[in-house]
Length: 624
Image (cartoon, rainbow, N blue to C red; front, side, top):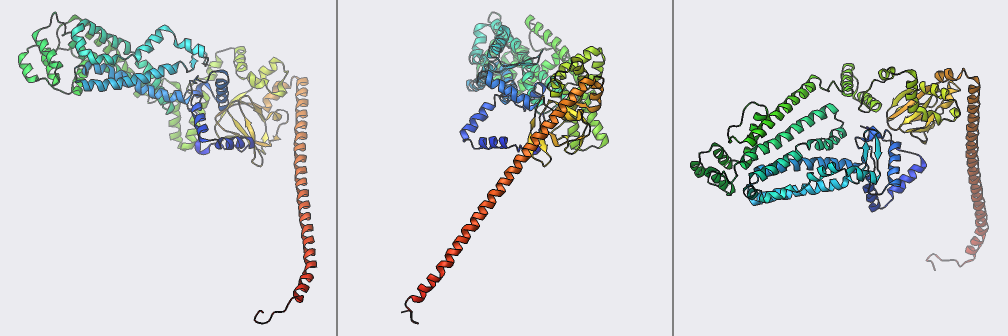
């Protein structure tokens, strides 16, 4: 998972970014809501699968630009928030639908009509949601597992979903079978046992393997909550066991009833049972006195008990048969039933021997020792506990490992050691050549020099807020940003800009060792960075003096150009400051001149006013 610390989230101080953010905040509310809805279909770092395929914020931004610029507005990204929320909703709805369907036909077929109507309305509502999900899949991109390619082309999406077998399999999921519940009790008698048995078996065979679809939707939930893969597999096994047990329980209850409704061989006891099942409140005690068949007596007794009791009783019998610990004694010796019970017993033997093996592996190692990634996480947890490390440092260690291996652990040294040197170089070149080839100092270098440089690169992982380069320190390495985003700060703390995937910095240190750094470089998210040290670079280039001289000349030219640019900026700033000071002086002098002019006018006017006052009529003491 991509961990982002909200309390330490980066606040950008670049002028253009702040202006853009201020403009977005000033938008009308309806525009903000519309943009938020449009954003739901875009790739998001909150989706658990994003980190595996899109390693940085820059890649997410570029992927969203590709989606918005190259494809229609109805296409939904497979790593979007809309897809995440819909997967959670569909998981719940699908399981409710698949659990309600067999239960309704097995235990509610002879209930009162209001009860059946309520079940029908609920299941039809669930089917409508599944229909919406089916339509949504034709608008959602997909990932090609073999190449990890994210396909967003509408034509490819359509034909990927239009494969005949898959299309029929998906259509059968939300087909409204529940509408037959209204007449299922009459259908059992009129259509006969064979037709009813075929229908129930068809339902069972179409949906018994649906737990794989349920697992696919369920996998989003534990990954969003950062639950380990081993625990997720244990939960899936438990859910799958309960799902298969539920369907088999319902099938084991209704099949004996269907086998008793054949009109050609129906006895008086079975007629009594069918009549009682069709009554809203049957007189069970009176009916028991008139029948002698053990199966009919058991079913009549069931009518006097709750539905929950009948379900749990049938589940207990299914478990006993599935575990091969007993045989069902309450039905007749029908060959169809014998075959079904043999199949239940065989599948139960397979399933219930598989589950203990998985559970034993789980309890043998709390983190599923066969999974190397989870095994390392378990070892790391023990290491942190033994060393009494803080929770903050433990989180950093776990995030560093998660960023490095992305839930798939591998021993790189062991794997690379299996191949000859030429293949090892080919692997490194395919991984890092695009980083090295973009550097101005390395342009037009021979291929074998680039190969030697790439072989010297060392992978380092930096987490959010880690300082990669500190201003004032002395540099001895160059850095290539493979994935992630970093911020560049001046010595005074002013944010100068951001660097993203494919960028590089610190290249002057390859030519001038111990060159003092003039800026801070800080990681804004988890970053994968390749480091090239001064010593390794010099060892590669020293034997080729002409190349070293050319690179040094390019570096000196670049330093001189940077110095001229810096001096120009400094002169411009000094001139602007000087002009502002001159303007201030002019305004101040102008203000002082105006003040003196006013003062002189006041002084000249004062005697006139005084003489006018003295020449006026004199007032007496009473004011007259």
